[in-house]
Image (tube, rainbow, N blue to C red; front, side):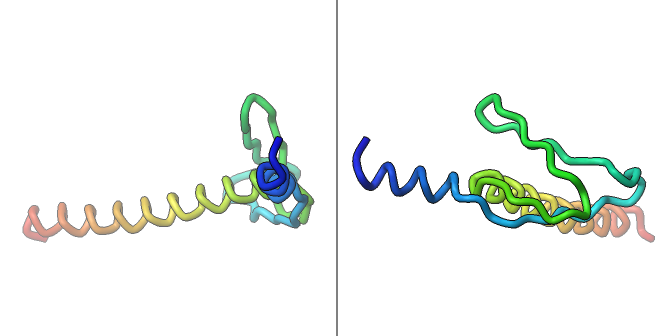
Length: 86
């Protein structure tokens, strides 16, 4: 493996702190599972844990996509309301 590949691998494997807020309706003690290349990472809600940076980046992307979806759904709901004349 080349030096730059090793550095990149080390970067993505470096442990970083993450805390995921427990969604409404989830029981205390529940966890969130992220699967990457067949390996499962179970992350406890409302507790700071150290996980590989690659998993933290997946969680960040998930959060960004959820926010985009919420905005899109809100915009569509407004469009449907307007079409109904209400």
